[in-house]
Image (cartoon, rainbow, N blue to C red; front, side, top):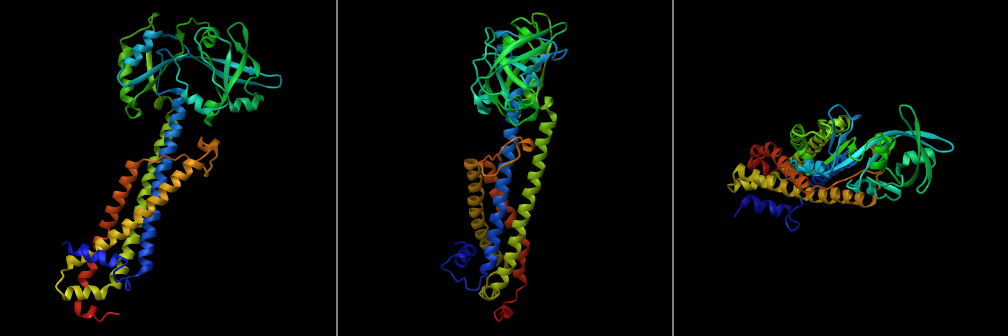
Length: 411
């Protein structure tokens, strides 16, 4: 039988003699561990949710990898079905899609706005756009026939006072002429990403191609989705190797860029959030550890007579130290239990209700995004338990300085 564990259970149990154990010390230690763990769970959940939400918005409009003409995105490349299949054959690639861009001016009776028209075809993955849609519906994007549909952002709609179903003219300035096209607003999206909401509207691929004077195979480039974002650099290298060996019908070479290279400021900023997480985790673990140290010292002093009796009966210092370490582990365990309930509960509550609101212009989201990662939460629990017990090893040596004869007269 494990004697230290047995004694620790007895003094921790409600049925044991707890009259001389400082209840406030135990409660403070338990609350300290619980609050520290809850803060760590919430912090990790917020950062994970925020990073993935912002990343998904950037990827939603720019994909994981973009393929352009080696001379720059002002020059077209020829892409047909076999070209897309070739892109998808690269290791790590899940899907490839065409796009073409052109510049134009949206004009209403009272206002005008310069925007970028992004033409997309029927193979384009519109799931992200569907999630961001706030009014109207997405059209069936085409690469041949067109009814001149247009999907604009809520920012554009507010500036031009437009709604789904409205019609407006767009003007495109060429080298020696100005062309006019009449579009119908099919839908309105909102990402809260200023770089997208202020500039990009979507239409059929054939519209952008014709306005640029291109044929049906010429595109600004291709957007490529990968299977694993964590292997983005490796997948881009695989695609680059494929592109080196392949030229289009006009003998034009292509090059690919990872989304992290296209928008380095956004992803560098997201990486900085990891530093904040480590700082908060370190501080919270330190708070829990110091709370447990003070609590353990108080408990040892409260149990001075019991320590003296155990020593008088032949118990070694190591046995008594292990007893109090087990006792502290029980307190930490109870704190972890309540910390998990509090932390996970608040995360789930935010996910269901979104009661914590944010300024979308600053944080790109309307409410604090949270994401539960059970593996990370379990790891935080284990590390908190181990660190909290480890820092108590040194204070537990206080029992070796307690003299049996004197301690039995201790009041």
